[in-house]
Image 1 (cartoon, rainbow, N blue to C red):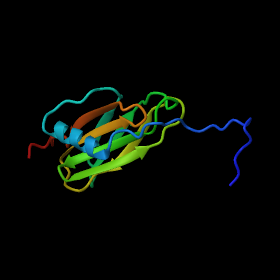
Image 2: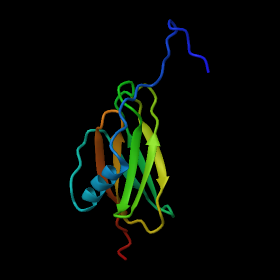
Image 3: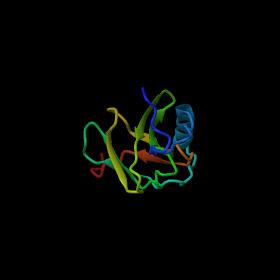
Image 4: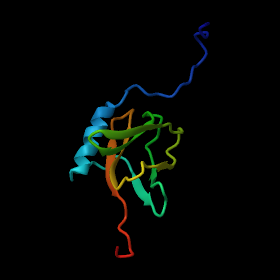
Length: 136
């Protein structure tokens, strides 16, 4: 391993904080499932993809510039013992991001959270399977 000469610039993404622990995201998700509210620090849209089996969830958002923050963590909280976390790297510009995720079979509702790990900002939303229009 060699070190670079002192006059050569080294450019790397700036991410100094590690964000909150996953357990805090899960606790926030459980609070949403129980009827609580979440801040709207970050734009987040979560939509159930109709007619898909297994169920799918479409997530979209527009992050703040990644120059000052870190990646995003998406957390899906299904209940006290069930959660999934996904790290989403971001480009330097604040461009919209989109993810479509497969949900576990039998999922009827969940809490979705997005957190900017560099700034600690977060938002959340409760998402439920849409009601059937066939009256059954």
